[in-house]
Length: 219
Image (cartoon, rainbow, N blue to C red):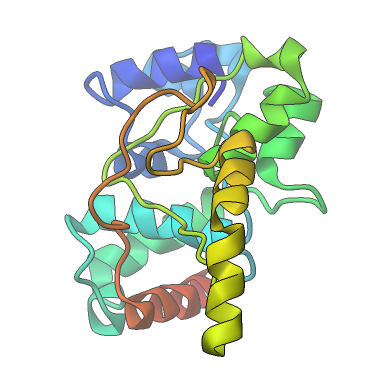
């Protein structure tokens, strides 16, 4: 999030910027919510939830915040209030270019996006390559926290032995690239927040129902 916009939005959201509040304010003129008129409307970006895993994870987090949990399904998503909420969000979210919304934010400042959903490791990695923009960006970790887990799988005895042999190297490489790895020393730009006990995601069936509903409302 753009730091100045994050501070202003926190005031609108009773002190804490949540996905539900942010989605409700998307495309609202800043002048109507005590922001600066020259900022225009509140610009929110998601990275194509129907096509990109990162975008679907961000949408799942937003939807869980809106409905109050991860126990949703196609029927509850089709309920009038939730369907209308998703439709309004889809109408407000700007269609991303070939680059992700976060990449566009780094290139264009607040001209295209002010708030975007992005994986923490992606955001930190890109900010490391764009230090001049880092002080203008605030990374918020809204609740409920969701995680994208990286796993290594080996087939048979040889595969399992190979996984065991490279696990430490893979863990170190992930930590170096801003992924949170249990037991690994994290750099200061990632911070020391502990991983949650579970991934915070709805079921695979719920994610698929959400993807289908998003495709419907964003046509």
